Image 1 (cartoon, rainbow, N blue to C red):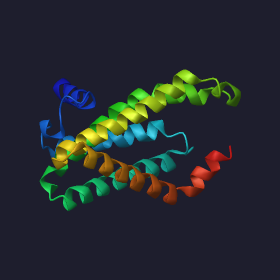
Image 2 (tube, helix red, strand yellow):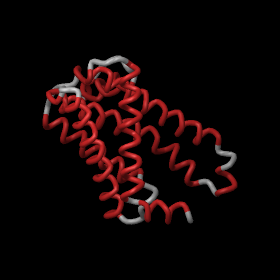
Image 3 (spheres, one colour):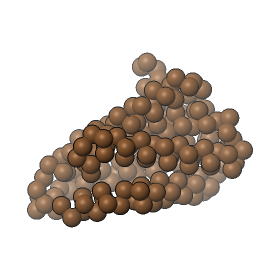
Length: 178
């Protein structure tokens, strides 16, 4: 178990690629479940468990379909299990690191949030690093240039983000008006 976690840490540190993970359906399912769990726990938009679970499952499903399509278009579907496992595992670990900073930021009053440079900087920095990790995973999974991996990562983020905004517009609007 520790060796698997260290593989994900090395992925986050850009020292390994998705090809270094075992092509295991069980690991894929386990990391997918962990991603959903961390997304539910980190959800500050939905107040009820069902809303958090639906939000998390939808986000993971959209990511999964998007990655599958990207791999299909590049004729690399045989790499789907390892690539998705890499995305799920690294995203889970990054969410766990972001969680205390996001909670710290949200626990502050509105006036204090304007002065909250440390947690805000940490959340932004971790979001940027998450994107860098996505580029790294795509670069290895697609055997492509860094430029194409950046472009594919941007498109993936846009698809996931816009889909979530479209599907959960009411919930997001309610959160913004609080």
